[in-house]
Amino acid sequence: MSEQRLESYKCPSCSAPLRYDPSGKLVCDSCGNSYEPDVIEMMDSYDRAEKPFDWGDYKRKFENSAERLTDSVVYVCRSCGATVETDATTAATHCPYCDNEIVITDRLDGGLKPEGVVPFRIDKNAAIEAVKNHFKGKKLLPGNFKEQHTLDKIRGIYVPFWLFDSGMDGRMVMDATKVRMWSDSNYDYTETSHYLLGVDGSMNFDGVPVDGSSKMDDDLMDALEPFDYSDIRPFDPVYLSGFLADRFDDDPDQSLPRAETRMKNSAEAAIRAEAGDEFTTVTVRNSLMRLIDPTVKYVMLPVYLLNVRYGDKNYRFAVNGQTGKTVGELPISKLKKWLYFGGWTAVAGALAGFIVHWILK
Image (cartoon, rainbow, N blue to C red; front, side, top):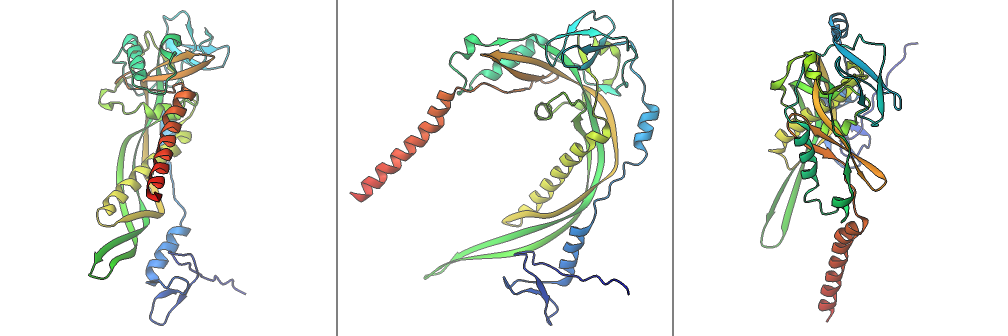
């Protein structure tokens, strides 16, 4: 006996079951909406479709063609186990992650050679000034922060990044509305029309960055963007002089999902923005986007790291070594926070009470 598949469809508006009507449409008895069968079939196929992905043979090409770093020295931190690289002239240094001493190991072969590097364009003094300027205008900083905070030694480190290029195509289903309002001598009217939009499209992305170090905070690295990739130079160990270089420990396969998410979000935002010119509201119901022929470059990007010590806590800061953009966490005065937010709430409450009292009088 052959197995039979039973098809059932749900209303896109309220999720109630749809029934076929002799008029040729699928009708929802719950909310009263009706739909063309081919539209519902299209949505159902989107819901059931599996998102294809094929890394292809790029990984094999990458592994076979990757060169090794030469004229570099590998250091391992005794405290946290971080592995960093620097030029062969460095005798001793500190770990950029935990600030403890790091010692040379016998592994002098280096890691995979990057394809490119964005050199440091600002020096350490300029980076420190950028951090100090970052403090200015922050209303919730503790009152004694300026006198009692200390800056740890700043360190420049080349952070490993994967730059992904890829095409992306796919389909999106969106719920949209158009709202029309008018009035006559008796009433005000509001008419809301509902639409189901299906969009097929493609887009190309170049140089979508994802840091390849698990030790680096992803949000911190994302916040340092953008870098000017027109300044990428062919890698040369001379760029390591006076700096450190982190080794990647997240390979392209591990980093690709983050790049794919960034591309997908950008594609959806662009499509929604275009549809938003015609409709009042647009919300994504279903999105099936796939990468087309992704490729990747391994590059080093310049970052300064330092800790700001205040009280018994360290606050980590990062500075874009090319642009000077600064990001990091700041201490917050609980009293100022209460006065700033709680005070406004109290003022608003008192004002509301005064208005009510005045109205009652």
